[in-house]
Image (cartoon, rainbow, N blue to C red; front, side, top):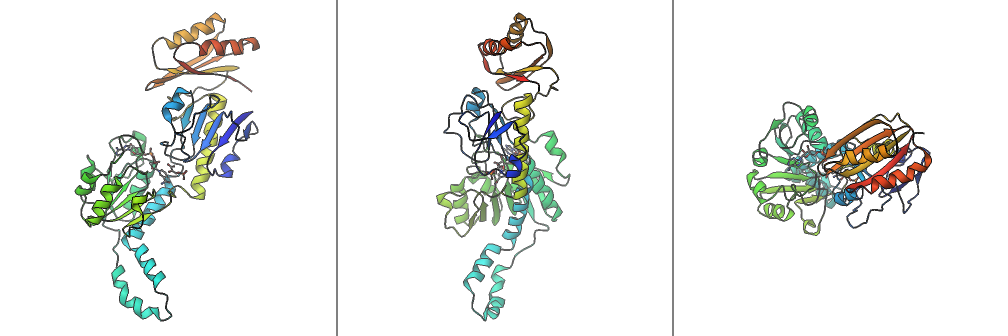
Length: 389
Ligand SMILES: NC(=O)C1=CN([C@@H]2O[C@H](COP(=O)(O)OP(=O)(O)OC[C@H]3O[C@@H](n4cnc5c(N)ncnc54)[C@H](O)[C@@H]3O)[C@@H](O)[C@H]2O)C=CC1
Ligand SMILES: O=C(O)C(=O)COP(=O)(O)O
């Protein structure tokens, strides 16, 4: 029985994906965590923990170095909530261009019975503009950014994208009318609206800063539905005070953003739709089951891809440092135990490597002994022995 510990509100439909082999019991010796945005940076990951699946996109809440050193695979659920964020950004573009927040708060203040004459007089202050023909800069063209860019095109907007690390797969999803900018400054210099959809990491901290704001035309409206810290909020507030940024919409509040009429803060709801939560939880549950039952890896954050059909009776999965002579040391242990390897695969990602070895004739007394011997090889991080049902 595998033990699953959950954090945050995980959609029940996703949890129901787990087979009867899985216990959702908040065990203190879990095999897997299924999480959303919980901050794990102050936790010591238990040695039992083989996998963390993040239902959602951002993994900046997970201590990746600690996870890798612990031999814990980390996965997210790419794209599971991208449509939810896209729809919110499109909604906010309309909110922004039609001054809907200010218009609604005007109406909330003026509730007198004969209000119609007054509103007919006052409403000109809420005159908006249309999105068609306006320019949107999209910073980061991954799962969310590509959907936002394509939807904005469909609204008749000019769309400029900036993503120096765009994967070939992601590029296929972007309409050819989305113009590619070579630099962030080029992307934003004619923008009426700028929206950012990048992961939070050391390279993206303060990606949108005073220099980027200075490159934007006066009157620009800014959206940060990525993470706190990707927009330099102090610089954004200065640009707002100078009437350079007209309005700033963000999903990530902090005290300095409070009580500013030109800032709208939502409570991290970009991915909070029923559909996205079910998608993310279901995808995360499937990822956990595949990894625990087969050791196969597809699109982990901290392990290389390795997919080998599990047809043998037994499988060793070995996470180790990416250093020379590992495979020879591993196979030597199996040869010494007189085991015939039916399949072997190895791959590396950055400092970490992963080896899968399938064998058929393994006797019960050898199980613990071989796990122990393989684990003792210097630079081996975690050994698992999987058994075919
Ligand atoms: N507000 C919310 O509830 C949600 C927030 N997010 C946030 O949005 C981020 C993006 O989500 P996805 O599009 O699903 O991720 P993704 O991984 O599919 O796309 C991120 C894109 O950013 C690009 N990128 C990375 N560094 C860059 C840089 N310095 N300049 C320009 N582009 C850069 C990458 O090449 C990639 O194409 C997540 O990491 C998460 O932090 C995602 C979903 C919901
Ligand atoms: O997927 C993401 O990166 C998000 O920010 C969504 O977070 P949540 O699952 O709503 O806690």
